[in-house]
Image 1: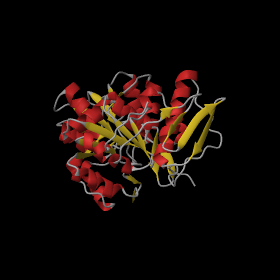
Image 2 (image 1 turned 45 degrees about the vertical axis):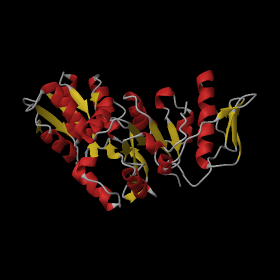
Image 3 (image 1 turned 60 degrees about the horizontal axis):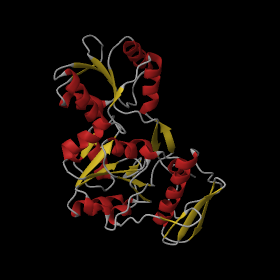
Image 4 (image 1 turned 180 degrees about the vertical axis):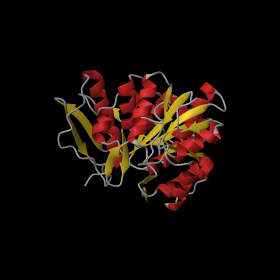
Length: 340
């Protein structure tokens, strides 16, 4: 269940790890207020890290994009799944090892920086690594699939099935991973969220003893925070929305919920149980009646999300089934990414 804090979240942490797509920007457009909120995090004395499962761009290019949308950043603030994959490979095979590359420039640069040798042909390769790359060719996918089936170790930068774009959700690198692993009958080592390598690499590179993960996606950002046992804040400016939240099992549940990054600078109360079932919080009341969610009252948008999540998770844990949302509509202007 959600946790309570009577003081602003940022006061309890010295490292704030931000997901990018859906949290800081969507496509080439900054999320409203993100630049100002990130500046406030730095002013509070916290380290800031930008953590991305997208392996196609180098940290320099990610930082340049952030600067381009008005968010202050350097390459040292950025940690990518490509860097985490390179760490996995060098730890397993040592510096100088040849690694067959199926991906973009971000992955190639990460391998070189880790003292590995990226190669385009399989001769002498001790492993294969894949990451999102817009120019990856089908014939190379077929060859890698065959090599993995025949025993070549496989590391994937990430396994996201979707990626947010200005025109809605699009297929992510996980579609390619599923193609290769499904054909080969082999599960890859995955470096990106929600697995540990990227989260651990971020803390290692950026520093901080009390990290918190801020994300928009339950199955990567929030589950990744659980993987290394750190708190998380779910914001509602990206992928995960009401239907995802009410069906979230414990490993997908955030520590805190806020419609926007403003939640970093606010206390987070928790709903209280009411007689006869349900919960209430600061003017909102919610209950599940015959499997259907009912919400009444008025108050802050963030408190609506907290009270709804609480009663829906209680119902899910008790019944094994998500609630029927009916025509439930969250308050406020925040809409699901890609909605008309």
